[in-house]
Structures are given as structure tokens and as C-alpha cells.
Length: 113
Picture: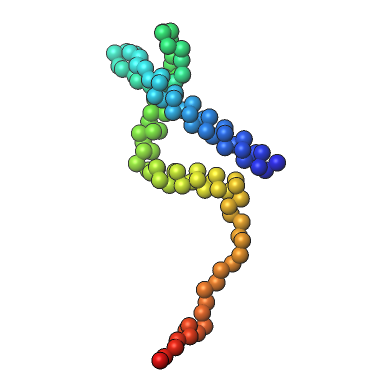
């Protein structure tokens, strides 16, 4: 059961990442609102002109503020290490196989010729 859940989570994370990456690269578009250009990305059908409500514009601005404000506080390396540790914990890599001790109470033997 745990292995099945691990496989499901693994593939769901891959699908979410691909959806996010494609959504951010393929669907970038710009709107003109009150003589300001607002550029953002989300999946939509190309060719159709669409608009957003005031609540949606506010959400976009909060996301932009969050990304700009926290970009210097959250380096990418610890973020990646966190997700890698999460994946390793799902696969049971946290089990202790044996304890290794390196306490040597005397020096190794030496041969003098």
C-alpha cells in the first residue's frame, strides 16, 4: 500500500510540475488595464480574448508580490533539497541498517624491521 501511494505521489508531482512549467512558458499574455500593462500566465484557449475580474487581478498582484518579495529569502538549493528529502523519506531511505562506530582504543599494529 505504501509503495502504491509512493508511485501515485511520484507521478502526480511530475504532472503538476509539467503543468506548471508549460503553463508558465506557453500561455504568457499581457492585458492593458487602466493604462498599465499586466503580464501573467495561465492556461487559456489561444485566440479567445478573455478578461479578468477585480478579484482575479488582486490575486495576480498578490502572487507577483509574494514571488518578488520572497525571492531573496528562499534560495533554490534548500528548496530542492527539501523536496529531495521528502522523496527519499517516502521510499524508506531513513531506515538505519546498522550502526557504525569508529572508536579505536589503541593504535593499529605496526611492524618494525
